[in-house]
Amino acid sequence: MRARSETGASSRVLPFSRSNSRFRRKRRQPRPCESDIPGIAAEVLRETSRRSKPPGSSRLSRAPTCRRFVAALFRLATQIAAACRSGIEGGKPLSRRPFVLHFVCSSLGGAAHHLSQLIEQPTFRDYRIGVIMPEDGDARVVRDIVGTGAELITLGSRRQLSWADTGRLPGLLKRFAPDVFHLHGLRASTLGRLAVLAVSNRPKIVYTVHGFHVLYYPPLRRRAALILERSLARLTDRFICVSEADSRALVACRVTNPSRVTTILNGIDLKPTETNVAEEFRLVGKKVITTVCRLHPQKDLDTLIEAFSLVSDRHPEAVLLLVGDGPLRSSLEANVTARGLDGKVIFTGTRADVEAFLRVTDVFCLSSRWEGTALVLIEAMAARLPVVASDVEGIREVVINGETGILTSPRDPTSLADALSRCLSDPVLSERLAAAGRDRYTKIFTAARMAAETEAVYR
Image (cartoon, rainbow, N blue to C red; front, side):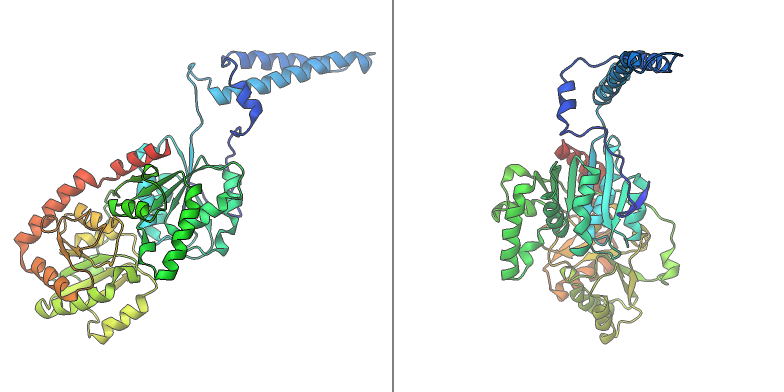
């Protein structure tokens, strides 16, 4: 893998542009045999040897030899070019590897994690993959992307890109000339599609909607965002939604028509780690409730903290792990202190070893106000954990209430506390939910299935 900054990136320029009409015309001619190239190369060498000036020869007498040399050299270049276009190995055409360039504006949250899970699948072995993302990346995401062998192109110096950071996008698109430009999330889709306007040879644009968050904006902002989405939709070849609810919303809001929308549910491969977080955070003998998320208003962590204060009264040995980071950390820490929960609510910060936390967890919780298809819930089900989550669209497509988990009314700390307490008090219930969740994961939410469906969209 070659990690690169934008200023120092060097691209492996594709041999010939699709816009090169001269080489399009060459494709109509019969494909050259491999033996043609050595023959013409030998002719070039012969003409080269004749170019040495014999004693007494004039400049005029050398002209035919020079013309033959140039003609032979041109034929050699043409044959090599045609061979690169059509292929010469074993008589089978060799098409160049399609180049898919991904763009994500934040290294935190589900979109970046989804991307790392997607590109590491064997489905994309025959593709050339590039990723544009912030330089200060989530350690887990960067590690996974680096491990895939993808070309990492970093912009900016923060975990989330701003408008100023992405002013170089048109230059990157011209330099790398991708076949597919895959945009992840609302900000990346807006900046990426605007950048494409400056590129003459436009790639195929695929936009993955990781939750149609526009619906939850204040009225004026929502209206403006929808107008922009409808305008930019004209530049978009295919939309991918990670939930059926988002697909329906995209069509209902007249952003695009159903024929251009594909629903591909998220999938993951759970990666084992060796970290001993039980000792690191003194969790031995505790009942552990865990959530993994960005500390953002969408996740409604104040409701979770209030619910945990009720759980703590019933289960004094319980602790709450908040795995992740984000803009609300300071206010959440103040809330914890005000409730007297210091030491019982643990902020771990961003971690690359999420699986290690799942190993020590008794109940997994997600208190979101809205979701696309929450990757962390799929991870929890893959880890065979009972799940308690908000009863909102997106989550309902992952968790079946009463079968693979318990869904509670959003922004209701009392019902959330009751569900968490039930799981902590009833090991039989917890085991039944955990086993059913694991079974649902293996049938529906694998990364291999997600990759195969995404590759079909590229084609």
